[in-house]
Image (tube, rainbow, N blue to C red; front, side):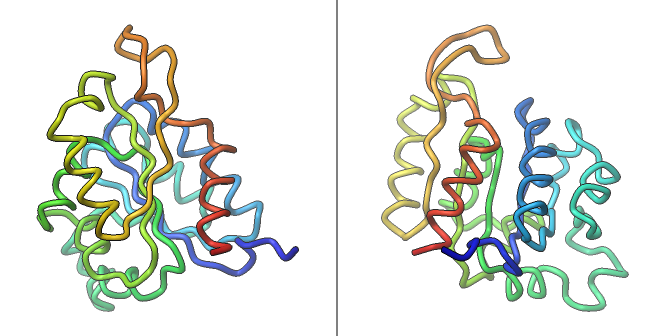
Length: 184
């Protein structure tokens, strides 16, 4: 079977969370599989990984600002939304899940998600209590009902010292999950 990533465009939103370091391996794996990867890095995500690292790995400019004069010449958020074959958000924080569920578009990533017709896949990563929080679970249910897709968080040791569900799955598991969504 043909590789689902070959010549496909993945818009990859990276939000704030310690698990953002795994995104470098996800970008590398997607590029190796033939995907054209365009990273949208939130302000919080940039606290954990740098645009320069992601640009080197993706071989594309990293998008960080809603109103970047160079990128906005092409209306960046619409251009990214239109070119996406699939949108991946990882780590998907409780914040991004809540904002998308409520239609809040105060950063580039949420605006791209709001404007795209491509499938959107969230790979949540957060503290076990944040994941179990009824508000977070209601937001996840709402997004699933609206057609958004999720790669379930893994269970195990969390960066905060807790144990439980909330770990970002390993990069190869995210790539496999994304592949399944692209094949559909």
